[in-house]
Image 1 (cartoon, rainbow, N blue to C red):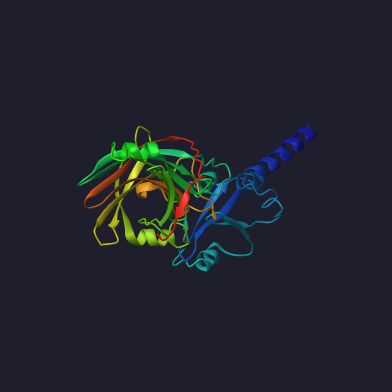
Image 2 (image 1 turned 90 degrees about the horizontal axis):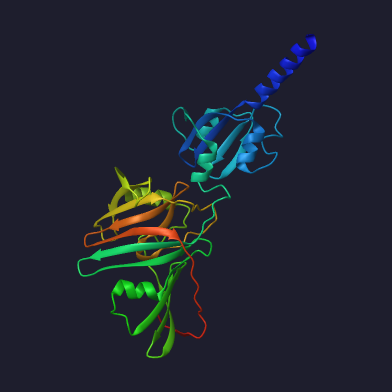
Length: 309
């Protein structure tokens, strides 16, 4: 009988260790922190972080500190001290129902984002032109590609005498054109409303230019939503932007974000990857009409580069 009681007591203690509560601070540089308490033991947290023996090697009570994808261990510090060290004002607040795995996924920290190439179909409406087309967004190669088939579809037969395939990479437009039997390669700068996608301060710049309105609508035929933001273009005119879910695309720190055609494509705000689903100005509207997995190939040999652009 005594042995059974001792066994149950040991089992009870092991269960307490297994379901221990871990305190986490979730911080943003210069904005301070929130804190959360999660019912996970150190080994479980290490598995989620994909950092073996990170917390588990710590014997005492410690705080797990998160700043985007960077995780550190804080010892002998209070929550308030950590909050103030990251620029926080006032008393640190508790974040209820914090999901560590979801946080890391939304921040693009987990390594299981496949980041497959997307075939993005779109529709363009302007005062003088209406058309539709598609392009490929290659996250791994950090480039976008619009094939001749799409250019022909977009211009509805007006380019029959020209064959054109175009790449966007590192804010540069490179077109491979066949005209009158000649094969030309032309490079030009590619200006977008977000030429600073890869700047560390991009999130701050975005929030300064665009404000979330609270309006939302369904994204295509999915259960996801896209959200409206209003700002101004380079000329100070009103611009409306809609951001939708990034899906299985996520940009970890250090991963370059390539621009898409017609200002569509992906961006990363406060560590979360979004898709620009629609963009409207005073005399134009461009929006995503379909998104699916895709692939492409194009042989760039044999083209003569034209300099001077």
